[in-house]
Image (cartoon, rainbow, N blue to C red; front, side, top):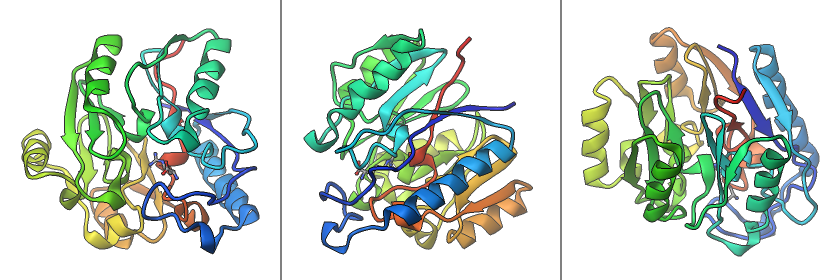
Length: 265
Ligand code: ARG
């Protein structure tokens, strides 16, 4: 089943402030390299037969390339983002407008949440992260608006500040994750829900290997996550390695650059 993704070209990408441990503004980042790597990710999706729509980047919003944070779209309904840090505040309304202009039903969130950065949608439930960015009350708000059960998970390691840096959906029923990023209680929940999960190593997590995008057959993953790639191949997934080292300087990987538009007409 082809997927529909929303992406944002990193035309204004830079590391201008520090809102996660990966970001070092003094070290800088090369925008041309970032754009080239991002184009590689976009082509990878298109070659797999997925559809990519684009939102115009906005000057002065260097993290807007991380489209995953822009909203959560399930069943054609758009739950808008409300960012934790003021530096990214204007991105929420920009993404919501993109959807409203195209006829989607939209909901302006009352509570702080960073879209698909902290909400990962499976067939029956939505997994939701909290601890660094998304307010746990937003989990409830999303559940009410989308009519899907939302399972709250607590993140405990600041390097893995969004759920999508520590866990990804292999398909609608199973996940891969890095246990140490979660509280003891949340780890127990994950073990119970996903006894057959792929368990990632620290090395995989430290190159943002869990920030991957799977369509159930193909997994687009950071090229450096070698243990994870081996395990995925062992399980008969097609692995598509992508190089996004420049965007990692802002704390992002393939999934961060990708907002899935689910179930529109
Ligand atoms: N610099 C961005 C931030 O800290 C990176 C966002 C990455 N996005 C994601 N979905 N994990 O907000």
